[in-house]
Image 1 (cartoon, rainbow, N blue to C red):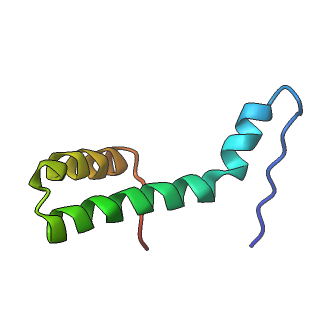
Image 2 (image 1 turned 120 degrees about the vertical axis):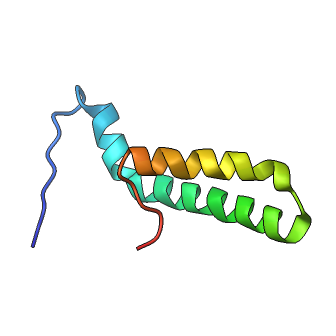
Length: 68
């Protein structure tokens, strides 16, 4: 299967950048979630749990997954 995305540049520059940087954004959110998890687990930073819960709720709302 192949997918081709086409953009009319420069009018759709923002959409192009969003699509092009998607994997980097995904990795950043994964890193944030892991940082929060580690801080809660190993450093007793329980105040981070509501942030992690919020992040994961937003992912569910948007039908997004961090890990396959």
